[in-house]
Image 1: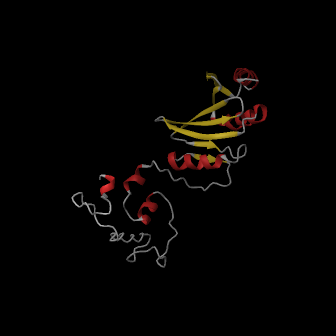
Image 2: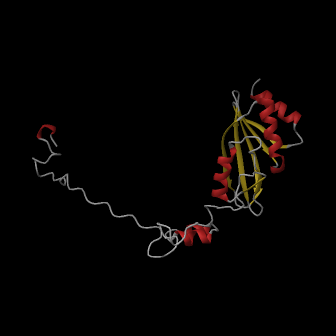
Image 3: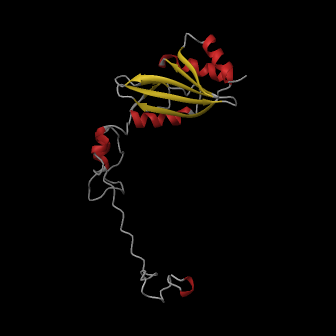
Length: 202
């Protein structure tokens, strides 16, 4: 079996579940599917061709849509399964039931883009999109302020050792590193300096 055979079988056996299939390079297959058919297509690829290795899940911000690409590999080829989800409704079925390790990549995309993954019991009900504008506007403010604006509970209390000056959630600043006194400063004019040995010519 080769990549061409895989494309032919995908096109003939699950043509009702895919929108587009193409062999874009040797051993490189692109498959575009509707997001509601994602789990069925991934399960088919896993069972029929042994695409069990999920290299990563990529996310692309296209403006009104997010494109999510699942990079699956076996010993023969790599298949990129692509889906689109509207920015106004960024909900995607979780693939943990097909590939349990996908949870790591899904969590990353949730943090970066605010995508909502359905049917995964390990997920929190909240999303924490790093690319949210209000997150970056609060950089430099106390942790409690930043977290409150993006809906995260810090879980800190006034008795927490991280509280500074009685302000809840503010991290204690680290002490400045003391200057080193065991090594004198470099002075190119001093030939007896430990770093300026005559034998080195420095």
